[in-house]
Length: 290
Image (cartoon, rainbow, N blue to C red; front, side, top):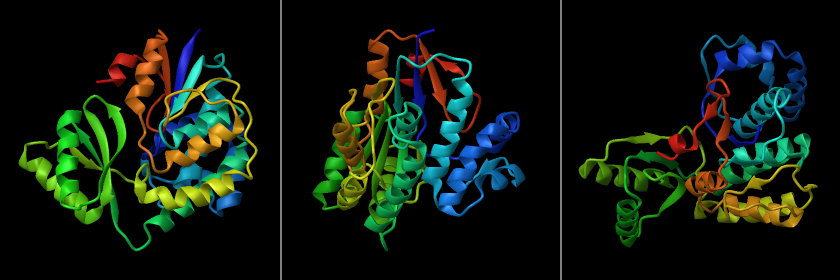
């Protein structure tokens, strides 16, 4: 079977789904133990003991989500061949790199702890928001952003998810102004994302330099299956190019729609999504582009 595999970015975790698959695959616990040791937090215990359906944690969310994605992949790959190609949305790109044996799991955990630390430092004592806007035309959105910027208000488009779904980033007071303006012109499908720091924008430019210095010390190998990166929408196989791409990912927008368009252009009909909310199942690419 020929298929593409995509990994989710940062989002809330559905515990019922995780408990069901992990209780049947105890070997996965080893991954959680390793991450727990690094972040000094017992992930497995908190997932299993949590009585709520939704699992939300403010600290160390990046290494935790990576661990869950890699665990799900390890179960999935037992019954399936390697993907023809892969991609990960934002944080999901790290999951793809680990699953393709490009980055060692333990090194990815270490680097994500630093990534999270540097991102928080970039907006220290500054409140930032990331909001998702659904149902707006890109040309209208760019005009709005240009209008807002003319008033010397910082706004950035961080994610191009679909033709009509985008993520906007900026300081809290500025985001409130753009929300007010959007509602004024009858765009009501606006959601605040559960993300503490605003990524994929120029606010992260300073952090990217520190992060790149740390990345240089990490061994990265050629992936065993191609990964479409977030920045250039192409494959990178050399260690240095992958590191530079991960550096730029911090302050440049995620071109997710173009990635899905690229997968579609390769005439790959089977697409599997690894996430944290529901069962892994085949999806039609055209449905993800709407």
